[in-house]
Image 1 (spheres, helix red, strand yellow):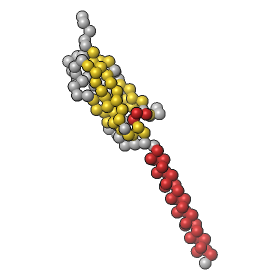
Image 2 (cartoon, rainbow, N blue to C red):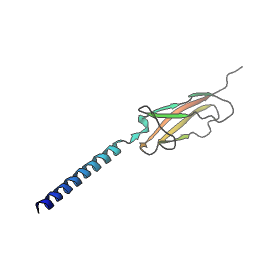
Image 3 (tube, rainbow, N blue to C red):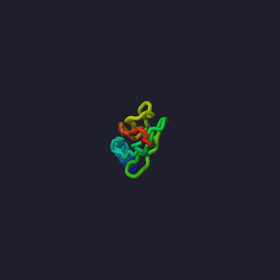
Image 4 (spheres, one colour):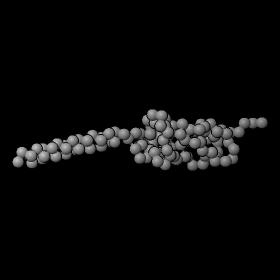
Length: 114
């Protein structure tokens, strides 16, 4: 009888430990979500010169030194056009463990007079 009671107690203790581990790990994963506004977003260029073509600077997003992957960690959307002289917006939308939206701007300047 004592052995059976002891075994039940060990099983009960193991279940409690597993439950605690599961709960604490799910809290860690929940806390791991990062808003893209808290990342470092860099455009390959912020000033471009008009050249009659659509121009979209490349986007590089990092978080704590880690380079994030487009389509896996974030999606990039550009303003319509990006061809004429003017100011345009790049929108970075978090994906997966990255949430929220951030925006960066770039300009297309008129060509220099010769």
